[in-house]
Length: 502
Length: 121
Image (cartoon, rainbow over all chains, first blue to last red; front, side):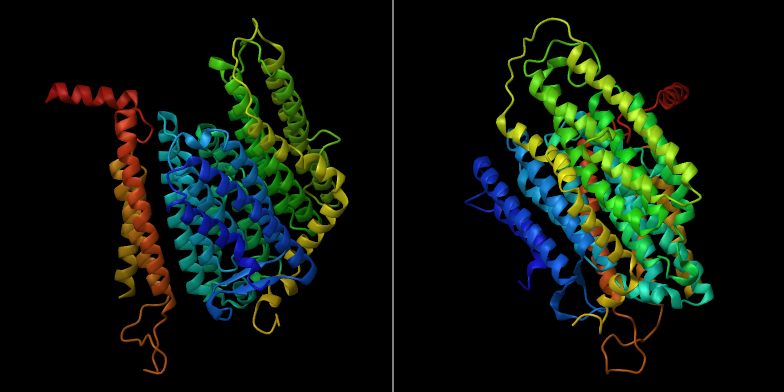
């Protein structure tokens, strides 16, 4: 399959376009059936791509036959194919949930959803930094429309902030790209990485400014500390399936930081090696602390989950700041876990708020939930996972991460913050669970049933957690190899340039 | 030429950022537009400013860099679409919230200020 690497981008794009045309347009049932089947095909394609890249080495797809470093190339290595698979699985869960009714609040939910997946997959697969910008814009414009989908005062307000912030972010992204192209003279990421160490002295200062501007942009997407204020409101305003899909968006930012600051400005970049690390250390730790405070202060479940996203961003950033293979590998494991579980928690928060009538998901005493048992079990599993209690995947992820700090000076910072943030999440989540499930007044009057599709969607996303533990061996082997590939300049840089790949 | 060019980009960016930080959606949209102009000019300059450079190989010994032009074209298209979106969103927000402040409500202090201003005039 020569064209396999481009399929994760082409499939959702074509599906999105086809859904706008007859005979698929104007029928939500046809939209649903078509969209879910395309996403299932997408999951299968992503698995195939992952296996191909794992067994046969990095797959490169050269668009239009223009050889790198001149043309745009898609690079499907272990890291990017893993992220693509993660997106597809999360997308499938969110989409199944939406098919139970949330997609009918406005027009064109499924086409927009497809364009969003296309943008995310493109951002993961591309090997060209300007193309990364283009895919960022694709995923952003789809997310603007998805965020406001259904429409309400709350959503409009959150969307205004989100759109303006991201437009400013895009301008900064372009400034950074202009600086980097002007100094390094290339936009192919592998080529930039090989050229950055050859820069003259006065060009280094400029390139450093460009690299750090990119950190600002990706930090905004990833919700790194001073740039994280948009996240809780936006995620709490979005409808549940959209919020669940947005769980991957912060990871796009983290992935880009990994690509740019661990490869282009990585350890081999000469005078510009690791320019972001002195910034990443304090910011990531502060992000984690801020997230933990936010989790404790949240008045409802959705905001709690949104703040848990910030906690996970802080944790992942700490791992990236460590700049060693074992830490990156742990971060990748933790990333799979946290994306799927926060996705599931957003869906669960919506299920709970539908069941509790007027009280929604606020931490107040309300009437008893009719289906409290089913939701309670799901919530319990999700809570254990997200807090990082044994035996589920959050525990394994955090253990791997803490192990990776061995022998570092920063260990005195990393251990306490991660563990205390874990404790804060534990307190907040247990308070949430006891208030919602155990403290009630009066019998249930709400007869709203749980649509089976919603339950299937939540189960699908939650099942990732035990699976990640049961198949922990193969998964960590894979993340180890992916991290090794990323940190080995012969594989992540030289192999992608002419003469490297046959 | 370089100094004038850099000065223009700098002025545009400063004005853009100043306007983006204002409270009303209209000024913010204008600010975003100025920012995108500044970005386009800046990207254009990343291929070095050069007069009479040939864009096609084999026409001259003095070449201009064609890539930034392609980049600017992409950036213009994307910036145009995004501006259109943000204008529509601003109108929607004006209709939903009843005012054109980015936070959806006019801060108490400034309403008092406008009220007293009205009384004085």
